[in-house]
Image (cartoon, rainbow over all chains, first blue to last red; front, side, top):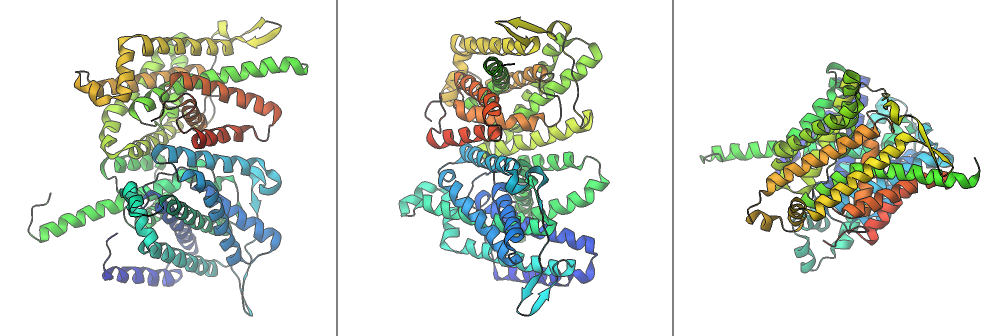
Length: 324
Length: 289
């Protein structure tokens, strides 16, 4: 998590690039970038647990999906505005996070993975069977409402406007998640990963802190879910199933949980590669699985971990030391 | 059929599925209890057993041959996985082992789709097992009773080996004091490797006999792995009798769940798993860690 002031420059450049992107690429590519941004929020929320907290969850899709359903149902039945709907999606994710978190954050390691999996399946089965509310496997379709700002009405159905809306939400969310890593709570999260016993001896309430972190992770997953549902104008059980839960794990792991932006790299890389290569290379999924296993074997900190270790070697060489 | 006679039939259905589940779970339980590795790929190994059996049956037409060859092949794959992949990530801890086997499960599923296709395959059972048997006034398919018989036999053999022989004593000792057993001159890594092979072979055998009963399709690994995790958690980490009890419970829970609360049936087992993890994290028959 070492950062120097120079890192602001690439971040500002990327934001500037994203701002002028609609001038540069086709509408199809723009939709791809929207998907990347949504999954970036999802993967970053997951990394609060996985990378920063050292907890392997197989159930993060529950909060993504719960948020998505909350957004869709409230917009559809109570004609809420879109920002309100997405905020409520986040709050729904946080609510579910605190409800399950009470039990889950007591666990470690394999028990944590299994209990999150069990809760994920509970929510999935509920969504599948409670047809009167969720529409079962058919899901719920709805219209993305227009945005009213004072007297202005912005047509969010137009890809361009929708792109800027998602960009705004993404920048806000990533900014909050970044700020969280700088707060005492974010630091404590790392500390508990390294040595929980010591953290509690210093006087921190590790249970309450973990619960708060789990709730916040649920909140941002819920926001991502709400955005994803608004993007597809549709929500169905695939938002909660085990594939969704393992997708976010793959993104985060491949990008690397050890750095803040690793999960973003993973989310963008997997989205892009799935879109480009799946049509070129037959059986791309086997390659993806193979890449994942190679990373687990040889680069347990993912792509950003490879970059960091290369940079370290480079620095050493510059100082005239023998590379290790 | 009247309401009373449906209960013994449902009970038998639950028993058969439960015992098949136990057959798959036994290998997973042994590996988890001994090495602490929760093998996400275990369901995929079970699926490979079913597909190998399908292909061997098409080439030779011998179901009994499948029951020998397919488990051996899957066991060999299990040994390779342990020796060349799992052992490498062991130092990174259990979470990494879980990630590795998760990646393996993902790849195996994709390979199965590639080689055998997405469509469900029909596997013929041998003529002598294809009819049904009448007993106690119930007519029941012979093949399901055959599953029951094989599962009970495997439990008996495993139980005797594990608790009554020298090999079993080594295995159970290595569960709790792996370093000590190593120091006594027993090659623990070799034991781990062989155990992984036996676990794989058991999953393969379950695949062979489960294939014709539950349809052979690329989704069968994903379906059973969740049930397997429930069994391992509910029964207790590494406890063979615990796995038997949990498999039985889950089989009956599903069978009667569908009968009485069809909407809630699938949710029941996850509720059970969550409650056990929260109230008694070591499982029903597991020892406290």
